[in-house]
Amino acid sequence: DQRALSQYSLLTLYLSTSFEKIEFMESGVLNDINEECLWYGVTCKDGTIVGLNMTSRNLTGRIPPAIGILSSGLLSLDLNNNSLTGPLPSEIFALTMLTTLDLSQNAIVGRIPITIRNVTNLATLKLSENQFSSTLPTEIGAAASLKTLQLSSNKFIGSIPSEIGYLSMLEELDAANTSLSYELPSEIGKLSFLCGLYLQHNKILGPLPSELGNMSSLRSLDMVNNFLTGTLPTQMGLLSQMKSIKLDSNDFTGTVPTQFATLSELTSMTLSRNALTGAIDTRLGYLDLLQNLNMHSNRLSGKIPTEIGLLVQLTSIALNNNDLNEAIPTAIGLLTNLNSIALDSNELEEEIPTQIGSLVQLSSISLSNNDLSGVIPTEIGLLTKLKSIALDSNELKGRIPTQIGLLVQLTSVSLGNNNLNETIPTEIGLLNNLNSIALDSNELEGGIPTQIGFLKELDAIMFNSNELTGGIPTQIGDLTQLTKIRLSRNALKGEIPPEIGNLVQLKTLDLSYDQLVGSIPSEIGNLVRLKILNLSVNKLDAIPSEMGK
Image (cartoon, rainbow, N blue to C red; front, side, top):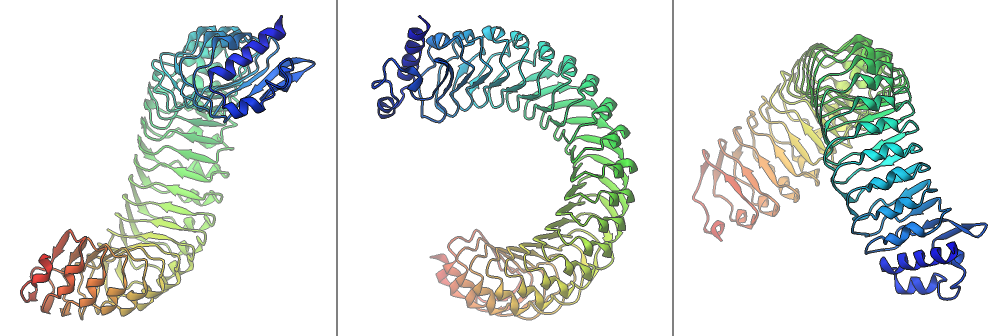
């Protein structure tokens, strides 16, 4: 009878999957051999097994074919997060009443059996993080009750079958990182209830089908890192529920459709690493819920529109590595929720707007490799949450503002390759979280401040190619985390301090093209990790014998 078949099926499963001996003993099987409803993981209703949950039980071996006779009333089977191997038996889809099947996080191999066409009540199928291969069966289209289909992190080949369009109830399709290829079938546009489409890290090519615009419930689209080409379909402007678009690392061309400005629910749009062209649409300002705007590494041109100041919910903006020009709009100061701003590697001009001081939540700012001029605004001292500042490779001039000493959370300062002058402010010694400081290729004068000795976390100092004078401060020997020192091409005088021998982590020491004199300290021989040592073009005495040990 069915009860005997259920008992046999359960025992076969327990034994085939190396259910731990102790757990087997405690599972109730031996004490209640005729009470399978009391066995481990079993849920019954009115004496019928309706659920089996053996998640995270260190199961090994194969799922036996006998699974197919477990219970004619079984609704839920959960074997996720184990170490099950071998192919998936076709008999598992004889459990025609199943509504939930979770086999994710195992090592199951082979193909998804074509008998999947039998489970017409199945609403949730989770097969992620296995080693399934072969093609997706076209018969999957017969599982018409599916709402959740998770297939990510497998090794499928071929395309998504057009029969996917028959899954009219589907709400989530996750096939990320599965090696799927070929074009996305236009039939996917029939999935009008789909909320999440996750196909990132595959080999899908060709254009996005215009039918995507028919997916009226779509809220999240992720197709990062594929081989998609062509223009972004204007029909995507019809996706009024859309909250997140991620299409980075493809080969899209053309402009961002103006219709995107109608996506009033959008909170995140990432289109980086494509070949998009044209200007940033002023209507972007309509997206007043937008929190993340990432379009770096394209070929966008023109100016950053002042309407960007309307996006007051923005926490991150990345427009770096484009061909943007003209000035940074002062309206950027209205984005008071910004945590990160990256505008580097463009052709931006004129001064850094003083309104940047209003961005008090900012932790990272990168404006390097532009044509910015003028001085570094003193208002930068108001950004007390700043951890990283990169203004290198511009035409900035004047002094480094003393207010930089207020930015005590800074870990990285990069101001190299500008026209900065006057002295290095002593307030730099207040930045005791600093890991790296690059002030190279400027016109800085005066001495290296002794306060640099307070920067105990410092890993790299790059003050090369300036007009620094005076001696190398002995306090540099207190910076025992240093791996790189570049002080070359200055006018430093005096002797190399022996305290430099304390820097046992040092890999690079470049003091060339200065005016150093005297003996090379024997303590340099302590620097056993040193790979680059350049003391050339100074007035130093002979190399001490200790350095060869």
